[in-house]
Length: 230
Figure (cartoon, rainbow, N blue to C red):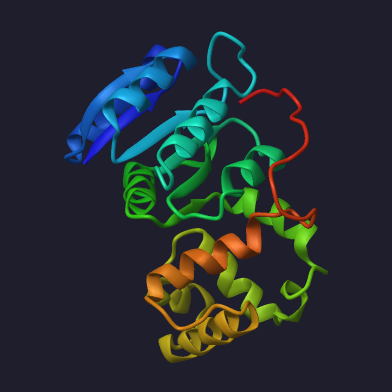
């Protein structure tokens, strides 16, 4: 699996390179700036991009904007964003095209190697890997939206765990219910969100995106962006 990695801090970038290589990933490029990232994504077409939001030269949202531009050129390009802070606008913009293969992790909450590597693999496979803090802030704006408002409290718990990339088995263990109960909840969620029968993995991604991607403000990209620290 080929990875393009973008991180401006040398020690962190080198550490991520060594970690991913130890788990069998091929590092197609490891870059430190927005222009380098744009060239790498355009020329190398990786299986997944792991991108710090804040990159030179602007040190605002350079990394994210490069990744979004690459997704417009290559629809569905898997992108895992790393950030120091929860930025709802960044998360919504990343999710706005309605396709899977996206993740948003807070750097200081990635506690161990396996957790991070699993997130990279999920995103590369077309799934989602959203930090719980990111989910909580996005969900706070969705609570009264329709059809989201039709979900029961337990269904909201299930879809939040789905957004973190958890399997039905993991969700059942977390909620201390049976896998059959989780399957029933996910089926109800798909029905309430109007997702027709299809591949279950695809419907899981669509359900998560439907729940998270609009921030309650309608479709389309935000009208403007506010610079902030990545």
